[in-house]
Length: 197
Image (cartoon, rainbow, N blue to C red; front, side, top):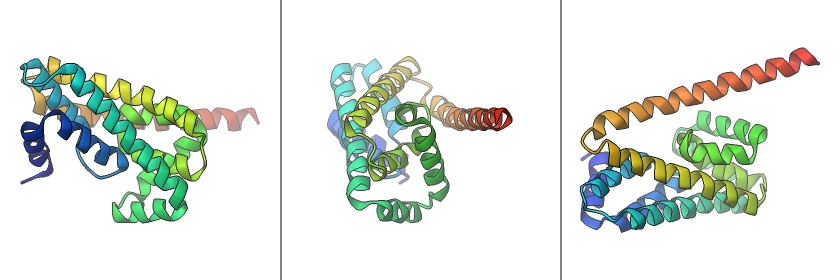
């Protein structure tokens, strides 16, 4: 049984509490399909099988708690936790992307990696903790970004309730396109700065 099927089974069996638990784990850094889960849960709302506001509260709450666990792990464990996690999940490239984004954009990178560049999000959490980024600022940007993410993906699931597979693959492609655009903009900005010097 693949991971998406297991997530669907948990959602069908436990409903909103499954959303909360899976998003805590996903936001902490475990490779679980959080965006797919929210899309499917949105479809359940559209079919009258799940309460919209309970889903929104569980989604935002679970994601924010998971993000703060990641922040805390980085704060307490330091660079060793980051390196260990990157090796364990074979994500050294994402770690480097997250470090570059955090150095360059600070809180905006926390916000954007909640909903637009979500594969880098757990690494931003660790790096925010490691670098001692202000917890109140991290929390502000985190809650704002997770609120956008949960509402957006639940809403998409409600709208495209009967076309979930197509929507899921389309959004996966969109994430990589957005990441490429951000990298190109960052490189362009760097070139402009170098030219001015």
